[in-house]
Amino acid sequence: MRIIPACVDFVKCVWYNLVMYKCEEITEKLAAGIDAALKKVDPDVVRLLEKARAEEDNERAAWALDQIIENDRVAECTDSYPCQDTGVAMLFVTVGQDAAFDGSLEEALQEGVRRGYAEARKSIAHPLTRLNTGDNTPAVVYYELVTGAGLDVKFLAKGAGSENMGGVRMLTPSKGRAGIISAVTEIVREAGANPCPPILLGVGVGGTMEKAALLSKKALLRRSGEPSADAETAALERDILEAVNALGIGAQGLGGRHTALACAAETAYTHIGMLPVAVTVQCHSVRHAHMTFGE
Image (cartoon, rainbow, N blue to C red; front, side):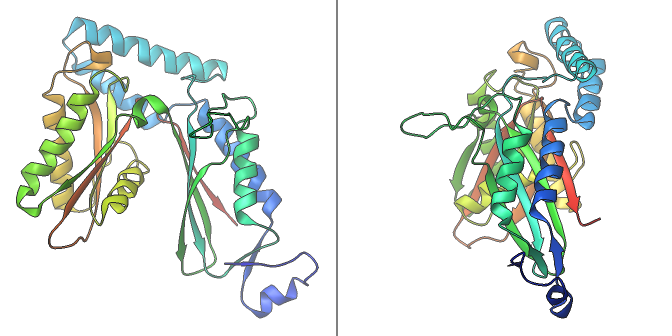
């Protein structure tokens, strides 16, 4: 990944076999993608909500699910926000080592977030002074360098109500699979109705403390309700979902079958003496976007 000044002839990119990206085009596409995403709940989540409603036999929970589904429908029809908390902007950026830019990629991304949140609530503040930045930046950005010259950005709006309910547990290996399920279930039990259930769960297992936390976020980038391609991980996802729904917290804490709509897990190799487990709790108002550049 390189920055090529505007004064340098484009031929040099060809000479070095680089692909040039214009930062203003990145900003514009990102801003448009964010603005659209904030006003529409992920269609896969809407389908999961409708499935949960069809299966629900608890009258209060069924009523709550009806309200959530109607809220999402009205938001889409009126081009408005399904939830007033438009969250922290999280960007997961995959950039090729042969990509070049006519300016700062970081600045282009932050400006895209700034413009994308122009009409949305501004929720970013200094952690100590609590002074609001006024434009919902800086976004939280994670970069992954890969071969090739591609540029791919995944956006996730992460609201505070659910984010506050996540957690990390540093288990010993002896706790095993049962310990993982127990840790996730306990985090959800402690959260109760606070994250506006029904929720979606991102679970990271392995690596180190911070790696597990990042994996739990990346798990939520997968298509909602789609199981892991790894059979063992997919089986863990199913067992976690079953255990969490057995808690009976239900929609908006009113009881019923569906405390969680889906669970997605990602794993990483870890130390022989560790078993890190991280949980990201996501409310049902899932808003994300996927943008590929250079196409």
